[in-house]
Image (tube, rainbow, N blue to C red; front, top):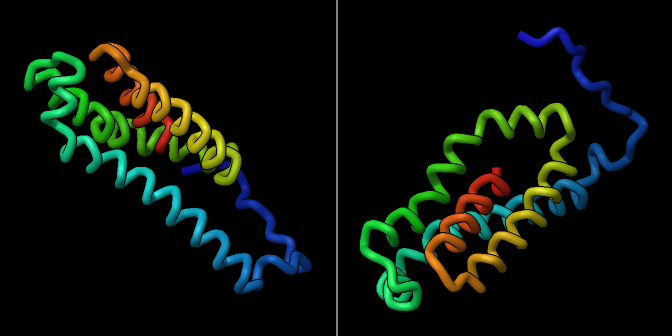
Length: 127
């Protein structure tokens, strides 16, 4: 139980009941979710090519695929609390930027170690 008072809502704020604002928030959340789902499912399709390109064993390829959702699941609650305390919008934007950087690093990876580190960072960023 928290001893912090709930945040005060400014009733005079016109964006609270604006349907366009609600639609924009929904679209932003959906785009962020699409990136997460694509990252989870994309490597399953590319599994044979990933093993050949990185000269990785099957167990290493499975770690590359699974380190992302494991990290995501492990940090969901702690980083959700960070979002509650620091504000959802700044945490979402920081996570999307970090996710983009990690995705570029994963796309340019030339070794399994770099790919594992990039996928781990992606899992941390997505929360």
